[in-house]
Image (cartoon, rainbow, N blue to C red; front, side, top):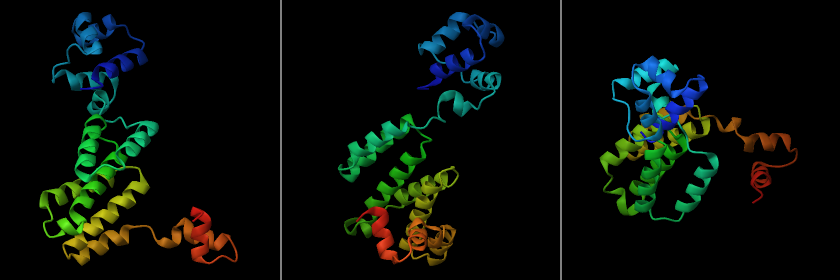
Length: 208
């Protein structure tokens, strides 16, 4: 409900309506609309689809679940948690996802951090099935996104999870969905920077 009031105000203004006019169309009082917008109260659950339909948006968009973290805020957040222990890092990412539940970068960060917690030697013999299921769920959500880079990361994690289960067939299925290395920038750099071998091309790109 974090963004609901602000979103109602935003879409009301986009339609050029006053609080009184919106209230008239919805069959509520203008005081009710005012309380929604300032966050004093929230619309009844049966009112959510009515509001979404009136504004011609999804309920997720109305409630703010479609919002992603701003790039600057996300970058600062990742810098802040970089050196934290896995348990602390996981907790911080979960807190951030409560604010931005559809942020693909945060979803991948959580999946990657969770994988680290079960792939280290100390924990490899006690792999947590629930953790693996959560990683798979996060990865499959990421695969539905429009972020190719994050999709590749999700496929790699799914392949590693399958390999950990000795499920080579499933692991290779995910591997085969990854882009070929021959489409990558390192290979292309080798081709366009004449006279450089593959290692030199990589050094040129990353200035190693």
